[in-house]
Length: 523
Image (cartoon, rainbow, N blue to C red; front, side, top):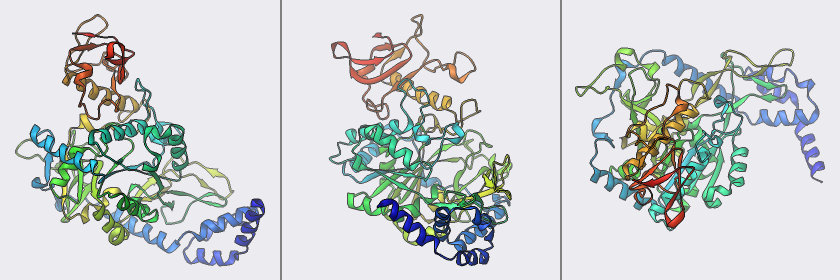
């Protein structure tokens, strides 16, 4: 019966006059999309017609022209239009007192405990640059525990719920793409949601847009298939409305959210210090930033441009401006964006209802597989087209009260973007960053490490060689044991460890905490 239903549906769809479709395409200059129409079987024709009918060609061309105009405009440097972000709207973790940090942390935990905070993950990216064909969140960087990014993040949420004493839970909204949706859901189901309640993990898919040639022609990925790509992490706002995510948040009593990208291994989901800071400042929009490592670092900076809050890329300013320094020696344009944001639900709702269509698409030149005149698939070696995308930070300009919190890069930012062997942002650098952080957690809690000969290791770990793979101290702490270094004294004080060390919080002999694959002793 189901087979008959599908066949009838396909016949009905294929009954749509092809000339009607051809006319629509001709009026938009896209008639080339039907070049292989006669090569398609009837079911393929029906499916292709359905795909073409779903495209608003006038809207796509409008986005293309506007994105292209914006790209051309950005070729002009923005130096004369820039101002540093207002100093009175920035706080620094490193320059804040212990009491202030404790106050923010307490306020944040109270909000989480009251069920007012949600976490929203941007997980539409494939692991292509990592050399894998599955979502980035499923990647294992080689930690002693072999935990993936998804598992690390899930367990941090579990620990944070425990710390906050929340009666309910922290809802986790995960925005996927057509490339990651199915595999991500299967992965979570296979691992029983890593201990989270399934009803508190909600997946939703962002939209896609046709890929275009440089002169505005939609690219064919197959004889009867349009080449498409996700509409960027800024496609979040359209997806929120399409899937009624904000409605779900309001039902749960959520008033604010933490939004972040999947590839940062050090991310602190719903960081109570950040939440508390933003609430104290009555911010409707907030962002964590790090100091730029050096003037020419290829990272966007949060600043004011044309009297609006924006993220300006390094390529959009001159070297002279990038090198400007304040009296204290720090760079003037120093607030490096790390895609780590706080938004109130009301603010995002105003974006969705009033401003989403004002957000401009950006052009990304890409190598896009296509069908040539002979009907054969071609995989270009150089960029041959564009993908149009919006960025999650494009909404900064609409904020009424925008606040920044500067955090330490070594504590909170180590993105995983490139495969093994690349110069930076690799599995090795991500693994090293996490183990270095956890090593410092153990030291701060009164523990120490000894090498194979029994000698105490230095407070600042050293590499055995220039190779990143020879990091001298392998130390991992399960998020279920500690969210951000708290509560470790009972596990490590006055004890020494030999690497590799994995603290999972399970009880060993005599009720002492067990450290897997390591030697443990008293100092």
